[in-house]
Length: 116
Length: 109
Image (cartoon, rainbow over all chains, first blue to last red):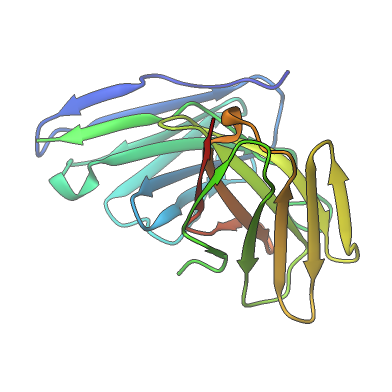
Protein backbone atom coordinates (compact mmCIF):
# COMPACT_ATOMS: atom_id res chain seq x y z
CA UNK A 1 0.00 0.00 0.00
CA UNK A 2 1.09 3.51 -0.75
CA UNK A 3 1.97 5.42 2.33
CA UNK A 4 2.20 9.16 2.63
CA UNK A 5 3.37 10.43 5.98
CA UNK A 6 3.45 13.94 7.38
CA UNK A 7 5.82 14.99 10.12
CA UNK A 8 3.21 16.20 12.60
CA UNK A 9 -0.54 15.79 13.14
CA UNK A 10 -0.80 18.94 15.23
CA UNK A 11 1.51 21.92 15.37
CA UNK A 12 1.32 25.21 17.25
CA UNK A 13 3.63 28.02 16.23
CA UNK A 14 3.97 31.70 17.01
CA UNK A 15 3.57 34.53 14.55
CA UNK A 16 6.82 35.22 12.72
CA UNK A 17 8.30 31.77 13.24
CA UNK A 18 9.70 29.77 10.34
CA UNK A 19 7.71 26.57 9.98
CA UNK A 20 8.66 23.38 8.17
CA UNK A 21 6.07 20.78 7.21
CA UNK A 22 7.53 17.55 5.91
CA UNK A 23 5.92 14.96 3.67
CA UNK A 24 7.36 11.60 2.67
CA UNK A 25 5.93 9.03 0.25
CA UNK A 26 7.19 5.51 -0.25
CA UNK A 27 5.88 4.63 -3.73
CA UNK A 28 8.38 6.38 -5.99
CA UNK A 29 5.72 8.80 -7.23
CA UNK A 30 6.86 11.62 -9.48
CA UNK A 31 4.17 14.11 -8.46
CA UNK A 32 3.74 15.61 -5.01
CA UNK A 33 1.33 18.29 -3.85
CA UNK A 34 0.66 20.56 -0.90
CA UNK A 35 -2.87 21.75 -0.17
CA UNK A 36 -4.48 23.72 2.58
CA UNK A 37 -8.03 23.02 3.64
CA UNK A 38 -10.28 25.59 5.25
CA UNK A 39 -13.98 25.35 6.13
CA UNK A 40 -16.16 26.42 3.23
CA UNK A 41 -13.21 26.75 0.86
CA UNK A 42 -12.36 23.12 0.23
CA UNK A 43 -8.85 22.14 -0.77
CA UNK A 44 -6.67 24.78 -2.35
CA UNK A 45 -3.41 23.94 -4.05
CA UNK A 46 -0.36 25.75 -2.67
CA UNK A 47 2.50 24.18 -4.64
CA UNK A 48 3.18 21.02 -6.56
CA UNK A 49 6.25 19.25 -7.86
CA UNK A 50 6.49 16.84 -10.77
CA UNK A 51 10.14 15.91 -10.31
CA UNK A 52 13.09 16.36 -7.99
CA UNK A 53 14.07 20.02 -7.69
CA UNK A 54 11.08 21.02 -9.82
CA UNK A 55 8.22 23.05 -8.39
CA UNK A 56 5.21 24.89 -9.69
CA UNK A 57 3.00 27.43 -7.97
CA UNK A 58 -0.54 26.43 -7.28
CA UNK A 59 -3.46 28.74 -6.62
CA UNK A 60 -2.29 30.26 -3.31
CA UNK A 61 1.52 30.22 -3.11
CA UNK A 62 1.92 33.56 -1.34
CA UNK A 63 3.66 33.22 2.01
CA UNK A 64 4.87 29.69 1.25
CA UNK A 65 7.86 28.03 -0.37
CA UNK A 66 8.71 24.40 -1.05
CA UNK A 67 11.69 22.15 -1.39
CA UNK A 68 12.11 18.81 -3.14
CA UNK A 69 15.68 17.61 -2.90
CA UNK A 70 14.77 13.91 -2.97
CA UNK A 71 12.02 12.18 -4.88
CA UNK A 72 10.28 10.85 -1.79
CA UNK A 73 10.26 14.07 0.23
CA UNK A 74 8.40 17.33 -0.34
CA UNK A 75 8.68 20.08 2.24
CA UNK A 76 6.42 23.08 2.72
CA UNK A 77 7.98 26.12 4.35
CA UNK A 78 6.24 29.06 5.94
CA UNK A 79 8.97 31.68 5.99
CA UNK A 80 7.25 33.86 8.59
CA UNK A 81 4.09 32.30 9.94
CA UNK A 82 1.01 34.48 10.23
CA UNK A 83 -2.34 33.85 11.90
CA UNK A 84 -4.10 33.60 8.53
CA UNK A 85 -1.99 30.51 7.81
CA UNK A 86 -3.77 28.62 10.56
CA UNK A 87 -5.24 25.70 8.64
CA UNK A 88 -5.17 21.99 7.87
CA UNK A 89 -2.29 21.17 5.52
CA UNK A 90 -2.54 18.09 3.35
CA UNK A 91 0.22 16.49 1.33
CA UNK A 92 -0.48 14.14 -1.57
CA UNK A 93 1.43 12.17 -4.17
CA UNK A 94 0.56 10.50 -7.45
CA UNK A 95 2.25 8.76 -10.34
CA UNK A 96 2.89 10.82 -13.42
CA UNK A 97 0.49 10.48 -16.31
CA UNK A 98 1.21 10.67 -20.01
CA UNK A 99 -1.38 13.37 -20.51
CA UNK A 100 -1.54 15.07 -17.20
CA UNK A 101 -2.66 13.66 -13.85
CA UNK A 102 -4.33 10.44 -14.92
CA UNK A 103 -4.05 8.70 -11.60
CA UNK A 104 -5.47 8.96 -8.15
CA UNK A 105 -3.79 11.00 -5.48
CA UNK A 106 -2.68 9.45 -2.20
CA UNK A 107 -3.02 11.74 0.78
CA UNK A 108 -1.24 11.97 4.08
CA UNK A 109 -3.20 12.29 7.34
CA UNK A 110 -2.81 16.07 7.43
CA UNK A 111 -1.16 18.56 9.77
CA UNK A 112 -3.38 20.91 11.69
CA UNK A 113 -1.31 24.06 12.14
CA UNK A 114 -2.29 26.79 14.56
CA UNK A 115 -0.42 30.09 14.45
CA UNK A 116 -0.90 32.26 17.53
CA UNK B 1 -10.99 29.41 -7.79
CA UNK B 2 -12.54 26.02 -7.31
CA UNK B 3 -13.68 24.31 -10.46
CA UNK B 4 -15.68 21.52 -8.89
CA UNK B 5 -18.76 22.50 -6.95
CA UNK B 6 -20.61 19.82 -5.04
CA UNK B 7 -24.29 19.84 -4.36
CA UNK B 8 -25.76 19.59 -1.80
CA UNK B 9 -23.36 21.04 0.74
CA UNK B 10 -24.78 18.77 3.42
CA UNK B 11 -26.95 15.66 3.35
CA UNK B 12 -28.49 13.66 6.17
CA UNK B 13 -30.10 10.27 5.53
CA UNK B 14 -31.12 7.13 7.35
CA UNK B 15 -29.02 3.99 7.24
CA UNK B 16 -30.02 1.83 4.29
CA UNK B 17 -31.10 4.75 2.10
CA UNK B 18 -29.24 5.86 -1.01
CA UNK B 19 -27.19 9.04 -1.07
CA UNK B 20 -26.64 11.09 -4.21
CA UNK B 21 -24.13 13.89 -4.54
CA UNK B 22 -23.54 16.05 -7.57
CA UNK B 23 -20.51 17.86 -8.91
CA UNK B 24 -20.35 20.55 -11.57
CA UNK B 25 -17.23 21.85 -13.21
CA UNK B 26 -16.34 24.55 -15.70
CA UNK B 27 -13.63 23.50 -18.15
CA UNK B 28 -12.71 20.40 -20.12
CA UNK B 29 -11.19 17.57 -18.13
CA UNK B 30 -9.04 14.46 -18.50
CA UNK B 31 -10.85 12.68 -15.73
CA UNK B 32 -12.96 13.26 -12.68
CA UNK B 33 -12.35 11.64 -9.32
CA UNK B 34 -14.28 11.29 -6.10
CA UNK B 35 -12.65 11.26 -2.66
CA UNK B 36 -13.89 10.67 0.86
CA UNK B 37 -12.60 12.41 3.96
CA UNK B 38 -13.38 11.26 7.44
CA UNK B 39 -13.39 14.00 10.05
CA UNK B 40 -9.94 15.51 10.57
CA UNK B 41 -8.18 13.03 8.33
CA UNK B 42 -6.64 12.91 4.86
CA UNK B 43 -8.62 12.16 1.72
CA UNK B 44 -9.10 8.66 0.39
CA UNK B 45 -9.61 8.00 -3.30
CA UNK B 46 -12.92 6.31 -4.16
CA UNK B 47 -13.27 6.17 -7.91
CA UNK B 48 -11.94 7.72 -11.13
CA UNK B 49 -13.97 8.17 -14.29
CA UNK B 50 -12.29 9.20 -17.52
CA UNK B 51 -13.70 11.81 -19.83
CA UNK B 52 -14.71 9.18 -22.42
CA UNK B 53 -16.65 7.12 -19.87
CA UNK B 54 -20.26 7.71 -18.89
CA UNK B 55 -20.73 5.45 -15.88
CA UNK B 56 -18.59 3.48 -13.51
CA UNK B 57 -19.28 1.18 -10.58
CA UNK B 58 -17.25 0.15 -7.59
CA UNK B 59 -19.01 -1.89 -4.92
CA UNK B 60 -21.85 0.28 -3.56
CA UNK B 61 -20.64 3.31 -5.51
CA UNK B 62 -21.93 4.42 -8.88
CA UNK B 63 -20.49 7.42 -10.66
CA UNK B 64 -21.87 9.05 -13.77
CA UNK B 65 -20.27 11.68 -15.94
CA UNK B 66 -21.99 13.98 -18.41
CA UNK B 67 -19.33 16.00 -20.20
CA UNK B 68 -21.93 17.93 -22.22
CA UNK B 69 -23.37 19.27 -18.97
CA UNK B 70 -20.01 19.32 -17.20
CA UNK B 71 -21.42 17.40 -14.31
CA UNK B 72 -20.97 14.18 -12.38
CA UNK B 73 -22.90 12.37 -9.72
CA UNK B 74 -21.88 9.95 -7.00
CA UNK B 75 -24.47 7.47 -5.75
CA UNK B 76 -23.87 5.48 -2.60
CA UNK B 77 -26.40 2.67 -2.29
CA UNK B 78 -27.58 1.07 0.95
CA UNK B 79 -25.70 3.60 3.04
CA UNK B 80 -24.11 2.69 6.36
CA UNK B 81 -23.18 4.76 9.39
CA UNK B 82 -19.53 4.27 8.38
CA UNK B 83 -20.23 6.22 5.17
CA UNK B 84 -20.56 9.38 7.28
CA UNK B 85 -17.85 11.64 5.85
CA UNK B 86 -17.22 14.53 3.48
CA UNK B 87 -17.11 13.72 -0.21
CA UNK B 88 -15.14 15.73 -2.76
CA UNK B 89 -14.97 15.67 -6.51
CA UNK B 90 -11.69 16.55 -8.20
CA UNK B 91 -11.09 17.37 -11.84
CA UNK B 92 -7.71 17.14 -13.49
CA UNK B 93 -6.16 19.43 -16.03
CA UNK B 94 -2.59 19.63 -17.23
CA UNK B 95 -0.70 18.90 -14.06
CA UNK B 96 -2.92 19.63 -11.17
CA UNK B 97 -6.17 18.56 -9.64
CA UNK B 98 -8.90 20.98 -8.67
CA UNK B 99 -11.12 20.06 -5.75
CA UNK B 100 -14.60 21.19 -4.94
CA UNK B 101 -15.79 22.33 -1.52
CA UNK B 102 -17.37 18.98 -0.67
CA UNK B 103 -20.63 17.44 0.46
CA UNK B 104 -20.94 16.51 4.15
CA UNK B 105 -22.88 13.25 4.40
CA UNK B 106 -24.34 12.07 7.68
CA UNK B 107 -25.84 8.61 7.85
CA UNK B 108 -28.07 8.08 10.86
CA UNK B 109 -28.22 4.62 12.41
